[in-house]
Length: 343
Image (cartoon, rainbow, N blue to C red; front, side, top):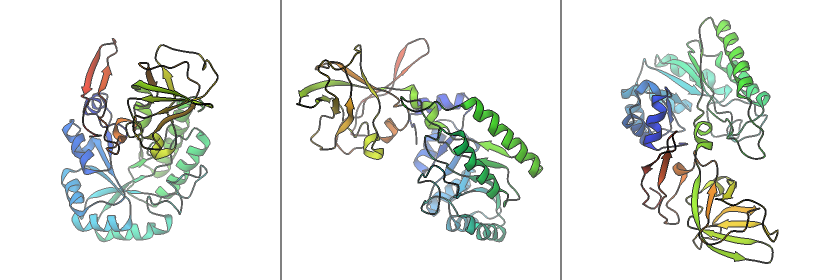
């Protein structure tokens, strides 16, 4: 989901990482990139019966999202093991992934029915899964969700792992740096104590894909035109919001620089960066303090390594850009050719 380039997936595999997928398309991509079934976690909200059959046949780790999905899996694969996705009620951050209004996971009130279905079909519920949210910087907020997750995990006697999902922030201006060392210390203590209380090792699973790749890439595009308005400058680039869709999905913009230039605007006017389409919402940045910009300059958008290329759409019909991997010694290599409207 965060990054679907086969070259980078293969690289991640050589580092000993697994992969999270929520579609059969991505499942097949992971297998094609050399991941073994036991290195893949499949979690989704709603799975076709035929897809459950495939997942069961492959032996991929599976977290199910509802009572109905668990019942279907029990009918298809009695005697097997799986995990269950929880919707915890600890929602200090007020995000859309948790709580009664969320569409994700089973509620605490549904756990007795979950256990009954598992008993009826001889299923072993060996794991719990949650997604605590995105860009959580506060350790106390994150760990409050962890503690609540472990409380609900007590209901499952065969528990072998707890999957806390992702949510770690990508470093950005104005966003406090996440304290990974303190997180490591505290989460290790929590899981050590929890494993002791359960009388067995309970494995911690994390899905930090966005945080791993987010700040490793930039999106570069050429300036095609500049308009000067009374209150701002409009810089039109050889791209569009369909190729940088963060604003379309989240209403947020990536920070942007002008390659080889620094300083504030010469006239003090803010800059909006717009795409080369007629779509009225085709903005890639708003209100930036860019230095004097002219046709032929290159704009560099930061932190586009996750949910950048994988989120592009065909909406505005523009060619997807090439993707270039720069080795540690500075050698560049094209790992995805330019072309196609989206992909």
